[in-house]
Image (cartoon, rainbow, N blue to C red; front, side, top):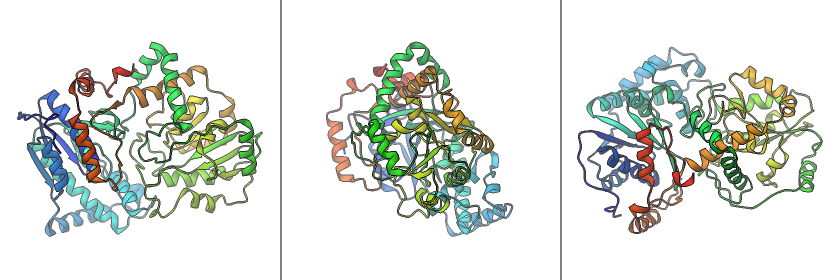
Length: 511
């Protein structure tokens, strides 16, 4: 793969670090594209950090003129024993996971990192038992924590480019970078159309990269709320009607136009044997293995499965005055190995005899929801920013990427959450105002359109481990050959973002 058109030789006093641990060539390539522009803007050397013997990542970094590539070496036998003994000593201080989550030495939240890593790798959506796997994951986290502290003292790192900041070792490196006052450059979604989010402070470690600054929302709301609200609403309609592809790369559903009229909505109620005259609330479950603690500045529930179980148990005790429909998450990551699912939990807790609680039927397309729902409920799902654009209430946790902006019902505690569910009819009756709906639509415009850039050097490649590497590099090579710097505004927008201290990149072409 030839990249002479997009890189230049450079050697400076300051360094930019690419920390790449995903082991997926598309991810690494995107990180390198961002780093290349950043290095040119700020006169920085590129150096790389990757897993031991990750030669593929090393070769891609070399194509982008990285000055040094460093492996996060594996522990030798003596080191393994030493860190396992340290981990065992720490775990012996805690009786369960709830207590261990508070383990935060020198401000680095290792307890949370280990728990999220456990869920992802054990395929267990929840536990409160500190099993032997916690011992090994904690030992690994402690090793990475010590390694990266020494690393940052040795090398003068001013920026860190890191697409994936969850799980070990990434989450430990990410936190230590912020503690060392290194600015972290994060890609927002993608792979082709993506944004840039900048982290500057350790207090922001739980902030999801697509969370907008309030001043940005207020600026565009005041500037021309009708214009930007209309653009945002047209985009969200296209997503929910499935006339364009969902921007979330984890959702692979085929594009299918499907809108429902009143007769078809009545048929939906009939199919589920529900009363169409009652208000209907949809509970959106999550991918139970993915990002349980990441992107939540307030942790009301320790994981998605705890939230789902407590929600099902609570609504099962309520009267039958409202229809409840449980919607499984469309992402299929880990589905074949996971130890439980939303459907399994529904069958166990609700069963088939309940008069007013149903599981969303596979026979129907999810585009019908916006025509039926009076309220949507989640912990941190995108439904809260999508359905509010249609004037539908959302009940969701505080501290997530769209909360505290005046168009959602945010809860900071379980007490507040269950009070919302108990009084769901009052919530629905108090309709969203026009301004609240406009604000939701402007927010959608900003987060899904204005803060994203359609990069000419990338295509919408498969983000999974199934990526066809030969096809990937063939297509990338063709894109590089026909690349024109003059027509690529990414560097210009990134420069403006850096010079003005903005959290997000602004695509001025879409203003």
